[in-house]
Image 1 (cartoon, rainbow, N blue to C red):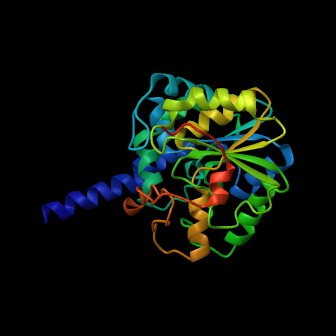
Image 2: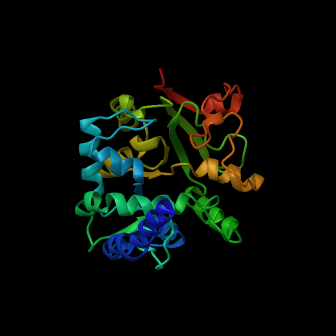
Length: 294
């Protein structure tokens, strides 16, 4: 009986005090919708850096399962988050300003309540952000009727472009599906599957010395992608942090109802997908122009 009373007290405290108080502050942030964000990238030909909980935690030097702590990475992330380049947009989760008054006990509700005092000082209420979730177009959507429309819009970003994919050595973005079939050409630069920032300088130097600025750089490289997109934008490249887009696309194509592992690809949100088998696809191997995974 006492446990039930305590549980109800905590629920009421969350519903009528903690959650509304936290979201009252974050709801003032200006964040485009996912569709609007994609259209902006297409129309403005800008670069994109996406911030989620991992990137925000890393600013304070908190390591995770996929990237160990680094003071330099923390500093670069904060600079990126607070940047205002004309050819670069910062994305943050639209969950931060989408509270409807209902006590949802989901991940982002709990994250906002627990961490808003830490990350709000890093953000600006005068700045317009893109939506980090623009690449999370399928699994978390209750209404999946517009998923196909959204991914087809995203594909227009690289339509008839020469693209360079920077990714972990086990990511294999676009392999086994038609995600990049409308690109003019595909090249790949590989980094470590985990803690990619360890090879940041090597990858950065390779790109600026070997990749033409007319090529579109697509990044699927964890937290490192966030800072790399920003640093390349400074030099005039268009570089876009795509996050888990390829995995979302695979789930969309199969109509997945759970975060299932994708054969042959590192699927970080599925424990069974952390050690994919080697990829011997000759087309994939031919696309690799540099390998910094070792």
